[in-house]
Image (tube, rainbow, N blue to C red; front, side):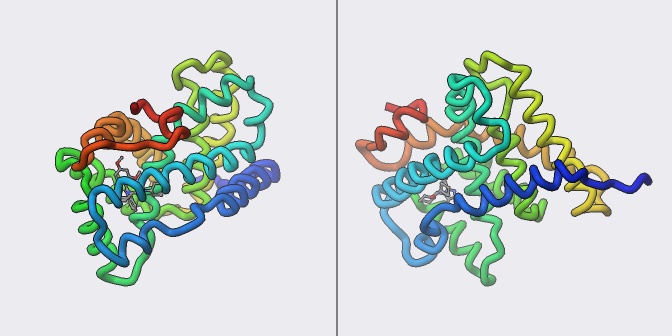
Length: 233
Ligand SMILES: COc1ccc(-c2nc3ccccc3n2[C@H](C(=O)NC2CCCCC2)C2CCCCC2)c(OC)c1
């Protein structure tokens, strides 16, 4: 097979994305909190809305560092962010869930999440997605670029300049394709499997609003930012 090499530009682009991804981590680690103790459905809901609110802010900062994003039409920038935050949030949760933890911790974490107040019918699709992400053993470069690809989805609602977004996403896809060959030389279809997860991610995020409004408690309160970004309240 021909030798796969990244160009200088592709390496620079990947470095910019990974640096931005690492700079904009979630401030406090939700997994650690969940491993400490079992909270009530109300406390868990509050924890989720706090984590999600800070994750949206982190995601905006990360997105601004994607080369070319700020040159897009201003309204398209908003449309891309609004259309991808839920998917980016579940992708991030899957990465948190699949993180290497001392043995037994993942079992406890799964247990805590199962009893957090999430309606039962969403457990299976959610954990299926988390486990399918975990099985890929993505390196952090792949996680960062996959998040950028999720944000730069040309077919989000209300995007006007479809072409401009497609061009940016294509650049990222080319980098990811080469990265997958370099990082997983044994697995021919690794790149295709990675992209397949984005389809699963989109399906999971369709459940999102319902997961929140049917959380096992009364009176679901959201922050103003989440009301703006999510289709709730
Ligand atoms: C809409 O329904 C749901 C359900 C579960 C989750 C979820 N899956 C997790 C997997 C690993 C660790 C945490 C996880 N979470 C919540 C959380 O805090 N998610 C954060 C969101 C921002 C990015 C970092 C993770 C937990 C769940 C347990 C109760 C407290 C909230 C979730 O995260 C989108 C959304």
